[in-house]
Amino acid sequence: MSTDALDTVVAGRLAAVRTRIASAATRSGRLPEAVRLIAVSKTFGADAVRAAHAAGQVDFGENRVQEALGKRADTADLPLRWHLIGPLQSNKANKIPGAFASVQSVHSVDLVERLSRASVAAGVDLPILIQVDLAHEATKSGLAEAELRSLLAGARELPGVRVEGLMLLPPYAEDLEQVRPWFRRLRDLRETLLAEGTPADQLRELSMGMSHDFEVAIEEGATIVRVGSALFGNR
Ligand SMILES: *Cc1c(COP(=O)(O)O)cnc(C)c1O
Image (tube, rainbow, N blue to C red):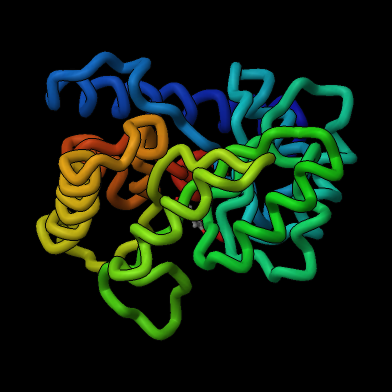
């Protein structure tokens, strides 16, 4: 596809997704600005990122560190924010601070500690989200609900990292009404933690919802949606 054609296609899809986000937010009694869109550019090239940026998109998500760093370097002339949304190996923690605006897929105390040390060394503050495993799926990573409280408490004592909320990657179901309960469970978990005294600034964000189900996620309280194929096409 020529650059002009790609720009036009991506701009059109972005506008459509933004409209759907705004409607879902309004339906759930919130302002459209209360929901942030992360454009998931994994497997797509820097040209796709440039096309989205030309249409006003600033936040991008990637699930592999190396791929993200390459694309970040290829678009270094643009003021973009990169978010890591996929599994992070502990030994790559030192590649994160300074390069990523957030890590949304943090799932262990060990990783929080490593990111803390790396961020302090780099002299930055790193926002992180804790990926919660509600469905106990063997194929997906995430922290068990039972371990969440001690991780949140421990993270409050660590410099360089700031837990800002929770992330969910629910089991796939074609029927959106089968996905909705997972989103609702994450929102309920947030309410429970708040009622127990977890500081609200650790629970500001709920990152949930992808191309297939982001409107339902917003209806259930998502503040961040991670949308890839609806913007860039099928992978
Ligand atoms: C790929 C991916 C997305 C986006 O998925 P789409 O279905 O393409 O919108 C969202 N979140 C995570 C964690 C992903 O890996």
